[in-house]
Length: 162
Image (cartoon, rainbow, N blue to C red; front, side, top):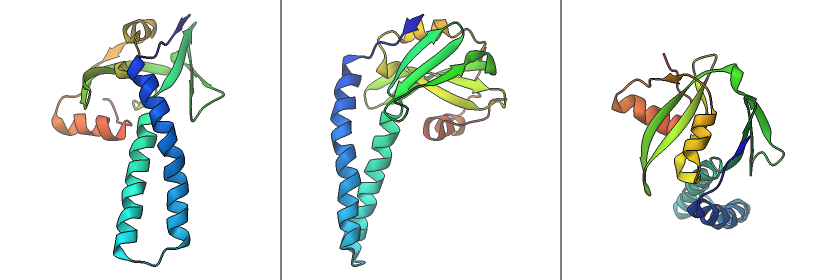
């Protein structure tokens, strides 16, 4: 059995992002209660919703992962009681190098029986990413090259692999 080990940055940013999450839930409610339809209020509300989306998108990738006997179990803020994934249900994995504000990092995407990417593990969050990757005994699939395909996987994360 192997367990994930968070990097120091992940712990810091995870805790740092939970505080604004609460504010981004409460603040729009207060704006909506006194909403008068003014352009400034609308733009502020839209800005807060966009920030909230990016915050949720960041936090959903921070998962505590355990891999044991062909099963991957993970816990996250959105799955506090965990979820178990049977790796036998997946046909392969795709390993990509992605670029973000903190530099380049590898990501592993699990590909399900419908040839769609459905689970992502980012090197950015784990000290032992290579151990986690090697413990996932699935065939490595080639992701189609091209800027459009890269942007699809980067922003939507659910992409068909041929």
